[in-house]
Length: 181
Image (tube, rainbow, N blue to C red; front, side, top):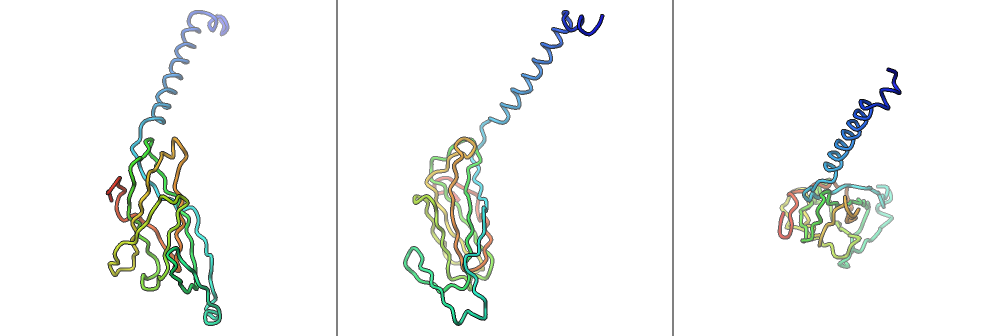
């Protein structure tokens, strides 16, 4: 019996049906694993860092740049750094309640930092500086009105952090809904 006789006979058909069934079953399991329900997980990703102003030390006395923040307060700026961050929900469920978390900004000494500002693309996002605890870390409470699933909607909040010193960003606490933290 050659291959074509076997292939066109009962044994070949059974093997083909068996292999197709196996491929469809494995594909279904993989698809179910990929599309499974995932709990909401908030991730903060640094997208870009820019040095927007850097005055040479020999010219600091001759050149003065003023920066006016959202509250109208003016700062003399010698260096200006901007970090662009994205805040995602990597889970499969949307977070419809307000999301709150504390960002800890460290880097140069807190005594050296006079300017710190966060600007959101979405005007409903808020931030509030936490009480100063006399260490080198600045803490700010971030409140987002909601956070849709990035997996389903491709949604994220974009924020720009401005400072006159270098900064490193970490989450102080886990993320919570409503009054969480």
